[in-house]
Image (tube, rainbow, N blue to C red; front, top):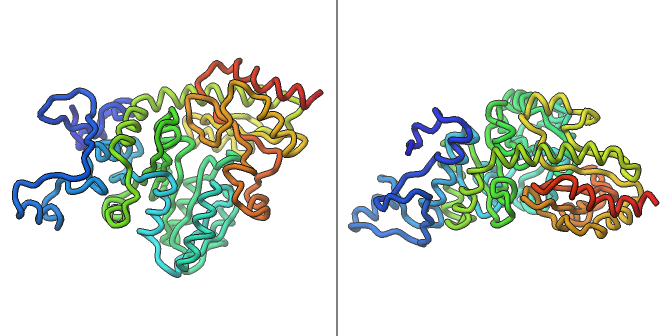
Length: 399
């Protein structure tokens, strides 16, 4: 089994299967689950050395657990980062990043088209502690530059965005950010490292909701931050150790199993989503389809340069607003009506009343979330069956 030091020499698929694993004296083949809250020391002196950081090793599963560590090292290897901290959820990863790296008086510049809960975290909670946020058009680097203040410390971006599949030019944003000594944080949830490598394009930190594609089967909730040793391995780790938004060993093990098939699944999701997007464009009840794999997408060429695949999320605007969107969703029988995504099962949701439902009407308008918008996470079923399921509702709308 290669050690972590050997991992960069391996290809992506090999890293996804092998990176981070250190076998115990039992000689197990699969990674074990270390279901323990604490660890035992041989002497009081050894315990003191561990707690002080003088010697490495396990202490307490809130911040050191072997199963979680394997997941962290494997994801870091796949992203090309120095360090990774796993968290209890994707939102916990964003919170840990902000709490560890920002202070009262600091300023965030964020894309306006991001997950609704992230907007809520920035606008409703971080603001209580004196951290302000400005929202700008994701795809306009000039708007990001114009929003910079002397106290700006962080750029935050999802690319592709949720749910409109808008792209940021990561390299262009990195150039703007670094000219002012600002950190660029990229949420890579929709693409995963199998399709997009933000560090190669200049990102400083990468955020994941492991709940989505890293798991791939909708089983567990988790998140992660990947980056350099100081910011992630020291600063964000310090927040995790203190505050405890911790990933469980069982969830880490599930995510490890998901990583093993990540590249295969992302290719399959992307192929199916592209077929479905082309089909949706031809439906008269649909006003517009949002998918970067379509030539009609305004950033199609950027997607081809920046990503190795177009991902599994397709959104579209129906003529007829909320009534049409709800009618289409309610006519499905195969597709799961749920706000989760990245699953082997195709899912469908109405963002304006689910993922972005807690935003004010003005915030939804700023994010481009219309009442007729529907988001589909294309799973691994036969595409023809997904089309047939949608066609039932589309016929009603067209008739």
